[in-house]
Length: 114
Image 1 (cartoon, rainbow, N blue to C red):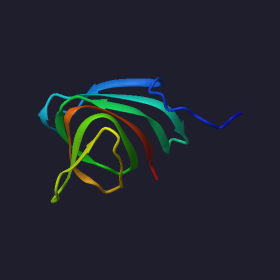
Image 2 (cartoon, rainbow, N blue to C red):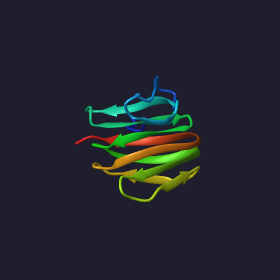
Image 3 (cartoon, rainbow, N blue to C red):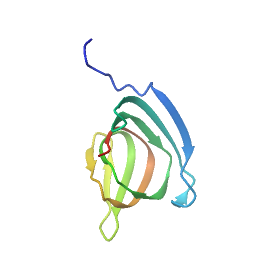
Image 4 (cartoon, rainbow, N blue to C red):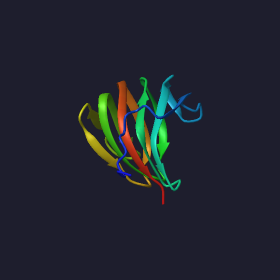
């Protein structure tokens, strides 16, 4: 056993619309692909979304690396931060605000729940 896992975006896939109670603008759909899961606490894969904006409330820790497109994260009471192709960032538990997709985007992610 090599104990190495490739994140390819070819794993278990789920497509859905953003929940109406969180939606701010547009009618974005998201596609989540799960390539790795461990102990119901750590997950990794790819995620993509169409143009639009919605409320987010993070209880988990997430690392993101943007593969294509452009998004903004707008913390409640703060300034928008824009991310595009090649950018990486971490969202810490307790982040609340708006996730806005400006150009259809795809990212790789690693999520950890405590």
